[in-house]
Image 1: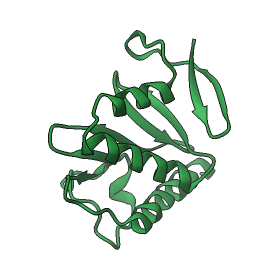
Image 2: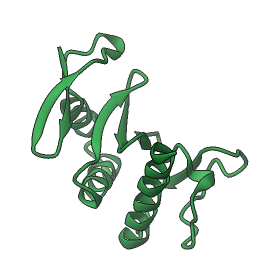
Image 3: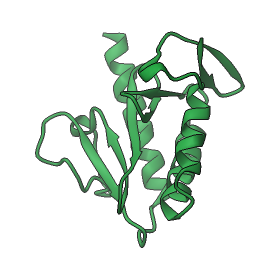
Image 4: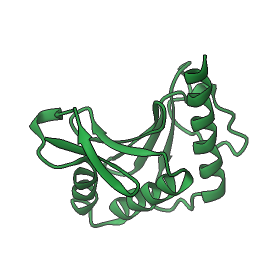
Length: 144
């Protein structure tokens, strides 16, 4: 049985991507631990920032190895690459980005990404605003 972490509790999770036996929180912890350099630190700080935005955000583990944060649908997917940490907003093209955080996957009509490099100093306030916009977008779809 797998579990999903919701702030304050762990509940059963129906997924079983790749036969994983850890819950999503443990999977993400493990991914961060496998990268003891700046990339693990950056993903850990992004994770904390995302979870701090709204108590209803749920973290899951999908696609055989990606941390995913959801609230009434997927908000964003994170991952670690050789020289960057990436957040992809599934409906990023529909979101206002007044601080021009999106710097990757700009050509499509659905997703938008943010590539974080070692020297970057992310604007936490702008990133939180973008996450709130993604939540609002998901909630508007649910109400239709």
